[in-house]
Image (cartoon, rainbow, N blue to C red; front, side, top):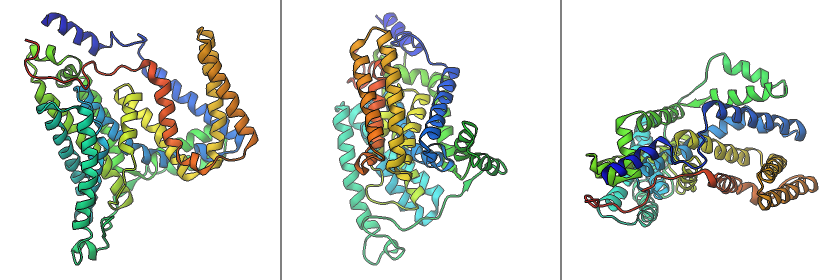
Length: 428
């Protein structure tokens, strides 16, 4: 039995059991990104929606994507070990509070460290509940979200809003911390100015590419660099090390992992605590970016991070791309309002028409008909209106979340033992 289970783990970790059978390679990803930029360039030229590919748009998208991506990366660590982490939102809340609490006194870097520790504490609570006591993972995660909301509001009241306290005298109140010092940004000298000049010419594709790159290299937070390194580090730790192989085996078949001498409990604890720490860093990023903690600051980003993990197929690269998409939509609705989102209706119609043709060719006529009808409806909406309602604009990131999850559902494969109860020695 041990040999069979070991083979199953090996096949799962190597991707042999992945539906579809074909792995997306780096050249394919790069071609996809280039095609997406080409579509945005064409859309900008047709609709005159210049903000679609502006440097400001992509700078805002990067800032919006980082906390979502860190939450998704945290979910990846937990679920690759077999623990579902619905509590990412609550761990982000703990990160924002701890960052605000320490940041106004000791600066942004200590705030980031405090956010990591606050999130890790939430991860530890989740690990104790799910790994040690065997609590249902969903119930534990929801409980942490509710508990974190109450705890942070209470602590903010007694820490920042206490009458006569140093925090209140420094500008804090029941809903927010005093202002913390700014974390310096950096730009690549010379390159930013040159890219900005190319962008202003509005050349097809060339200026659009310059605007995208300019937004990614100008006034970038140092925490953004840290986040990028964490994505790269996660890939090498989980997919290129013996530690990562053992941790992922706990999420595929903990019984087989135990039979090979892996201490499953230890690996699950490490994974869930790291998960909380990454979500806490995402929360700290929000507090540092606005220079303070404020009540309700996470705004559901932990849940969107969970969606990026799923749509990214439990892989760091997929999470980064999904977080980038959601960050792009979030920045778009904040910067441009209904006019630019209105232009995206035409892009979505083109994509749905392409999907309809592809599905029709594959013999799936029902899906093709539905996609074609939706494409026609969007074109009609675009022609008959000049903008979209503000309520729809505000919901754009969440609509994008649902669309991406819908289109990617057929190729997803979660770790086999994800969310399943495990007790030491159960395979004997």
